[in-house]
Structures are given as structure tokens and as C-alpha cells.
Image (cartoon, rainbow, N blue to C red; front, side, top):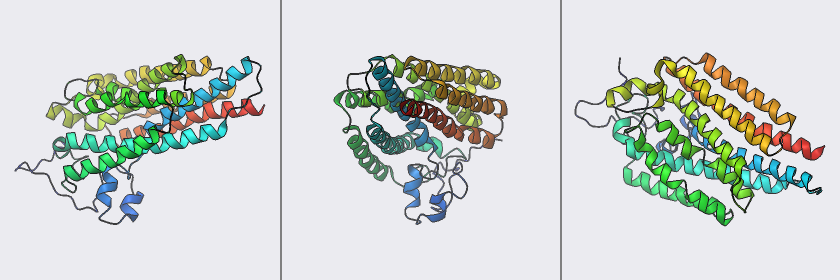
Length: 338
């Protein structure tokens, strides 16, 4: 049975502001503690389900950690006694965390403005504040511009090359919401946007520009994004068919597990190659082996016909991202302390 639930007169259904969003975590802090007037705004920016912000942040953090490892390896090769500037690294991580949450919020608002009519017809998304009419498009647009100022403030803390590179992602971000209308590979376009931090983190650390390691990391992060967002897209595939929308979930169909093996394999291999290229050591590879085991678990236990199973596997990629970052960070820290 279709999950589509459009009103006969074509108007958006109105949900009470205390009605949880379908794919939000049970008993999340927004539903439990936020005042009623604030809930629609917090839900608009996915504060009740922040997984998207984490997934946007991890490639940024990977890249900073990769650059720090490259810096230390270069110092060793030159016979220098310089240590990694951990205070500077921590500052970059904080900036990228703030920037990721701000810009993910902007992306959510923009996406919801574009897709509000579609969202209103899908059971999983009909309760979103714009689709249900709880927040007007004008108010949401003003809020998005305010969040853009937060993101811009963060970006301007970086060197000029990183600032220019940051602006370079705008085009991909703007076209992404339209891609599911024209191509089955919308998840690849999302990967181009969501993985941009794999380039930006390195550029923020190294003012001289981009080298090959972050480019490799960027390609790996794109493959990872295609993998986890394909899992996510399986929740909506029936509605997508009825509305003429496209996704890799529909493209891969019954072969999804094989395609996921390919893309997660590319991600693991690319991260490994990027780490090797900057001189990462044993602890990095041990951590990456754990990340690979996590990816195998996702694929082996995925049930593409079970929406909750897909949502749980999708959310688990927060753990995958954390493992990769800790593998790089621990490897560098132990190398410095050795």
C-alpha cells in the first residue's frame, strides 16, 4: 500500500506542533523538552534528528586529521622536531562542527522549500513544518539567511584559499534538490556536496592549496555518501515510483547489496590510500579495519523492505564516520607521543 496521503482538495495536512516527525529518534530532546512554539523551528533544521549534520561534519574532520598526519610525516622526513599544533587542530575541528550544523540546517530549509509539495504527499515527511504549513516559506527563508551568516562567519576564519573553496560548493548544493526529478544518481550529487569538507579541511590546514590525499579522500567520501543515502532512499521508494521521482534505491533495486559492497569498498579503499599517502601507521589501519567491519555489518543486515531497518542502518553511519576520524587522530597522536 502506498504511503502517500495527500488531501483530496490538494491542501497540506495540518499537524499539531507537538506531533513528532516520522523519522525522528524516539523521545528526542526536541519532542520532550522544547516549548511548543519552538518545536517547528527546531524540526525545520532537523534538531530532532541531527544525523545529517554529523554526516556532513565527518569528512571535514577526516580531512583536518589527514592534514595533521601529513604535516607530522613531512616534519619527520625533514628531520625536524616540530610537533603537530594540536591547539590549532582543535580550533579547526570546532569551526567545522559549527559550520556543519549551520550549513546542514540551511540545506534542510532549502530542500524543504523546494520539496514542500512532494513532502506533503509522503507519510514519512508530511509532518515537516513547511509541508504541514506550520512555518511559512517567507519565515523559513529569513531563518535560512540568518544561518548562512553563521556559516559565513565560520568560513571567514579560514585562509583565503579555503574561503574560495568553500564558496565553490554552492552550485552543487543549489541543484541537488532537483536531481531526483531528472536522474537516478541524485545520491551521487549529494555526495559531491556532502563530501566537500574532505577538500575544505585540508585547505584550512594548509594555506598553500590542495594536494592529492584530500582529493582521494573526497572521492572516498562521495562513495560513502552514495552508499548510506541509498540505504536511506529505500524508505521512500514506493512513493518515489508513484510520483515519478528517481534514486539509486530504485536504480539498484534487488542488486542493492552488491552495489553497496562496491561503494563501501571504494570508500574504505580510498580512505586507506589517502592515509597511506600521508604516512599513516598501524593504528590507522586497525581503526579502518573496524570501520570496514561496520560497513560489512550494514550490508549483511540490511533489509531494504523494512523502513526501520533502513533508517537504523543509515543512522549507524555516524559511527562509521567517528571510527575513521578516531583512527586518523589516534594514529597521529600516538606517533607524536612515541
